[in-house]
Amino acid sequence: MKTTAHRGLSSLAPENTMAAFELAAKYGAEWIEIDVQLSQEKVPVVIHDQTVNRCTNGSGKVSQLTLNELKALDAGLWFGEVYRDEPIPTLAETLLFAQRNRVKLNIELKVYEGDNVELLCQQVKTVMEEVDTEPEQVLFSSFSTDALLQMKHQMPNIRRGQLWQKVPEDALSILDNLSAYSVHCDYRFLDEATARVVKFSGYQLYCYTPNFPELVTQLWGWGVDMMILTCHKTIWNPRKHLCSIY
Image (tube, rainbow, N blue to C red):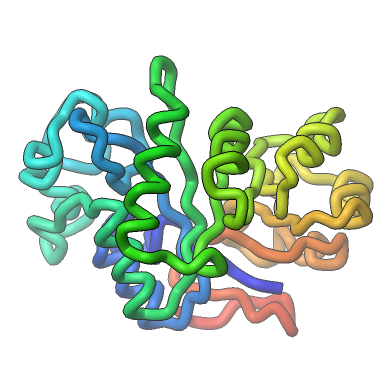
């Protein structure tokens, strides 16, 4: 039973920033989940939303802003004065951080309407090769099956996890086609029968984002392998199925 820090330690620092990643590593997170999409000049950057509106002092679509424009934004002040001037990180910077701190990355490939999926995957591959990322340090995940299929062809030695809100009835055929490693789903839409089928079929089963232990204790018993947490001042103690102060 394992845990992943969702967008870093995002309850205590602004999500998808180095500050959140540093806190996650400081408190012993083995895995950090991040979101990756492309800037205007096709540089992979770490940010969740299609626009910068919610988590920076700027506005506009990520895909329509240059890297210099993105780097000039304040991605921390919205969370608190102590994080003023926290920048949006690039994927390269985040991968190098992970290498230095010996943490693993769940890289969610963000695909919005109109995005070039093949180009996103190619650019991610290029960066990972440039910084010499070890395959076991990374897991790709996405709601876009097309993106995961691209990564199956472009980087077949990197594990792939299909994201769903609710696991669909045809899940096993999709997973087989992907040669998937894991299933990632919303804990609120998981039932025991589905969990048993996923586990019996040989896949890892991860749930997002159950931050209150009393709501999900039974999920461990269903075979869930990892919880992807925003870590609201807590971490899971899998042996006791409880939380401790983070």
